[in-house]
Length: 449
Image (cartoon, rainbow, N blue to C red; front, top):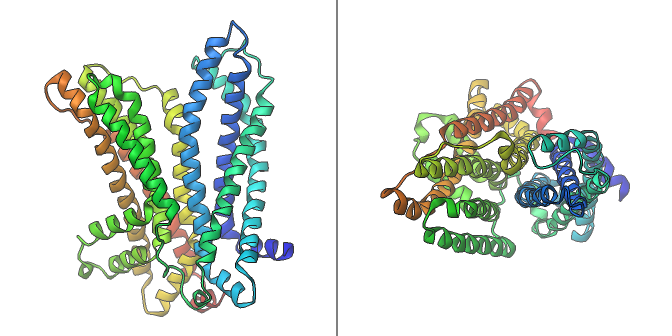
């Protein structure tokens, strides 16, 4: 089995390379957060640095909570996409006589092997950079040169261990998806299976929505918007978790609704792009959810800050350090996940382009289809994210009206434009490169590979 595990990893390098890149990033950030938390905890016994240490530990806890949600969502999407991309191979293994337990063992070992390699890479990068990270924190007032750094190595190892635990749990959660593969999938094209809501997804979605509703009830009762601003961050995080869990019943309906506004008669490439994304539900959900999370994190927090500042007549004070601590690292994970998801589907995209070429599609039509698919992913994610942002801002209005006498909403247009430009650029690069590569190869050879 070990030989099969590693030979298949070499054969499917493009799928696993995307997972390696994302898990390396998450392990790097997890190691940083573990070291920062250990740095704060280890200095709480010193009276001269106790206050700074407690503040650093609290900041690490808040940022760590946000990161946990972003990392779990991203790795869960990657692992789900791995199985989705390999359904045909899994079905062939079943036809060869393998049991679901054996197939699950192979995929789990592959993911753990990738996770261990990523942990080594992430750990080396973290060890080389943690000194600069602590210096940056000290420059912004959450640490000081007098604080001992003896706990940093242990914190790095703790963070890497916690990150690896997330990978192992994600691997074990694949068992349900692997059991859903049928031998008939060996004859089907990738993308025909609809990703459905599981019991676990329903429970997580219901619990996070209920918790968000409870916090919104507290926000509505506040007399001043500044009193409830802290709750807004947690409402956004809960909405983030809910969107991730309810992706199968949220993403496709939103995508189908807004894309139907454009007539298929206007462009054959648009029609093919829309049908491909709606049909390939696992790919659509995995690609759209990170974009929606990025909007919730950046546009939501920035808009809430500007709205509260406008209501209180104060200038927006939102330092670069606050951005990095609260949303910078989770945003980096989400944006990396969005790019990696599209990259991991490159091999499938090459087969789709080769098939369309044999059907008579021109290179221009193929490029337009790729561009339209990227646009559909970004716009769908933006729409879902904006709904969550406006829901959060709406909860602020009762307290704002009690202070100013009228509603105030400030949407952060600059951060929104930056996020749109970034995710659209990364998605375009990820879909256009495989399209260009497929056009330069023999279509028949791609299809039989």
